[in-house]
Length: 334
Image (cartoon, rainbow, N blue to C red):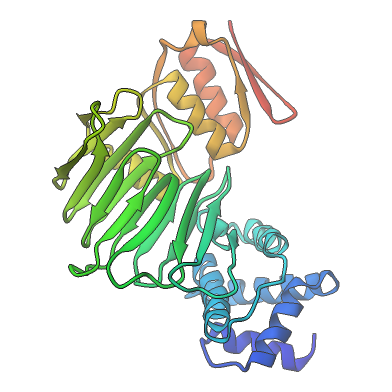
């Protein structure tokens, strides 16, 4: 590793300016398979010796600056983000850094981040992500979630498109509403903290408000657009099948739990539990729906709990046998 690259890398961590040529050289060094060991060594050294730098901060510092340079200078991204992600994951595992935040690099870059060109961030199954949008809004993404957003919001409205589950801390701007578009409901806010669970392959969309003000925009059974205000401490579930909206219990523990990488089930149906397991651990759960769908379970797992630990709990609580084969968990009654 040359002193020049070390200097550029350290200046990125210190958020100091780099030239376009230095940026290009730094990106080439990050993505070149021949320098992978050097990259890993540099990351490990900084994470191990800098108490104030955690995985999320380090990753955001480097790649937010790269995005800003790309936006400013209309530069195209041609390096392998997926490969770099694997490098960070390997180092993070070695240093026992929490997995939450490691999905932050899993984004698809656009060449010019303008209002009509979008970036897509993905939190794959088994991972979580955190991003900061152009207006300062913070977004946490749960496993198996995609969010699409512009590099710069329009003057009239801030639009993002969600497939999955996300927690938002929206920067307040009364003249520029923030709208989360989902497969059945649009969530319109001015500035607030709220959670939206809207997986496109699930029938229900759930919106939970922690603070501020949120309006739900949806279609009723007759096809008319209606608007419903949500108050802090309320959670509403919208059925895409019958287009009905219902007040639900406020799942504060579950939401705070997934943000901290804790898996919490509160009297969940078995099918709901299975979907969470599949997303969190990136596995396929095989079981007989007729034998298990009427079963329910309450359990809380702390950060870093392994899949086999969860399956042991399920096995004892529901009296089932389980085995793991090639990415599948097979459940059978005892």
